Structures are given as C-alpha cells and as structure tokens.
Length: 270
Image (spheres, one colour):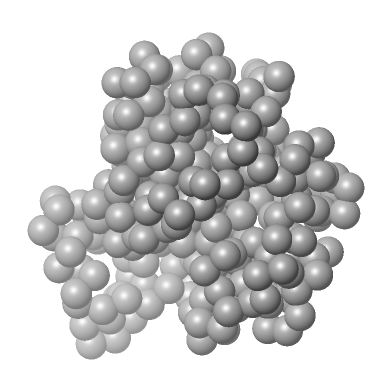
C-alpha cells in the first residue's frame, strides 16, 4: 500500500506530512518537514535533532513549536538518544515530564499513554509508526541500515505483543519519507551484515558498480513488518526520497553530515 492517505497539512506553524491509519481516529501522526522553525543554515529551519551542532536553544524552540501545534507541552514530547541499535523504550505509566528520556539510548519507543507524543528523528533513515487501535498502543521506530539488520522493527512488534497483548494482525504501520533506492548507495560491509542476519538482499537492491549497490530501506522494513504478521494492506509506505527533495527534508548523505533532523511522530488522543 503506497502513500494514499499521506498529504501535506499545517498545524499551528508546523508544516508536516499527515498520515491516516485506516478506519480509526484514535491517534494523530505524521512526518515533519524542514520548514517553519527557528534554526539557521545549515540546520534551517525546523531542526528537531538534539544530536546536531545546532544551537540547543534553537532545537528546544523547534520542539516547543511542534508540541504547541498539537496542543501538548514540550515535556510531553518524547524522544530518545538514538544509537542505531534495537533497544526499545517502553512507557506504560504517566510521567509529569518525559524530558529525562532524552538521554536513554534506544531506537524505538512503545507506549499506551494518551497525550504523549513519541518521536523518531531522521535525516535519511526510515521512520516507522505503528498502531494497535484495539489495544490503543503506539510505537515509533528508527530504522537505518544498522537497526534494520538488527531487526528493530520486528523486535518492536514482538514487544507490543509481549507487553500489551497486541495481535500483529490488528496492527497498522506507516513508513515515512526516507532516503530512496535512487540515492542510497551501500557497499560490501552492508551486504555482509544482511547475510549474517539472514535478511534477503536481492529483492531490495540494484547493482550500482563494483561491490556497490543501491538499497531500499523502506522496502526491507515493509517486508519485515509483513513477515511479523501485519497484513500487507495495513502497511503504508511513503514514496518521497528525502535526498531528492531538498526543499522539504534534511538528508545526512546529501548534506555531508552537516544537517538537521525531521521527525516521525505519533500520539494517542485522549
């Protein structure tokens, strides 16, 4: 299923790509663009990444803009310290302020708490959002190639089942804008990592030269989501390549590492 339900919207000052899960209205979710923030070049302007060299007060201001746009306090916006692994932060009880989770090393967040916005920051990697509308459980996953070979999205679905009783057949998933196969060239160590972890290679790559390939991160993760039991018709995939669309997105590869971060976010409504 492609990006049939994704469209550009505005909430407050924030321009974002809104995504709708089929047949439910128990959450709000989407993917920010680089516009309408306060950061300056090369982080202009809505840089939401705390792991950049942008001025911290600019990032805090941008995060406040995002929170305000959806009617929550900045303290209810939860992100983590992403390390390209497969650890998962689970939030199953209310907190007065969720800011302390910013130092937790993790690459996925699961929660059943309404009014808490969980987010994953990316600048090429695939942001994955998951929802169980019956159990009212959500997740946000950061899937770069390293997290992908560690099967972070599969582990997150398993965690939703083990901790909250979520049936994968009832889950819905959205994979947001990421670097496309058109721009994502990888080399032999990445192929070897796929082989070591028994992940198919040929269906998701094209030869790009001697020991060089172009890889579709979104396609690999879609395949993993379906293999974990989520119906294929319940998985949406954005076709937007962040590297191609400089006017909309940051891209670590395109900008040689000196760039901001957009966010995939999701929140259960009260």
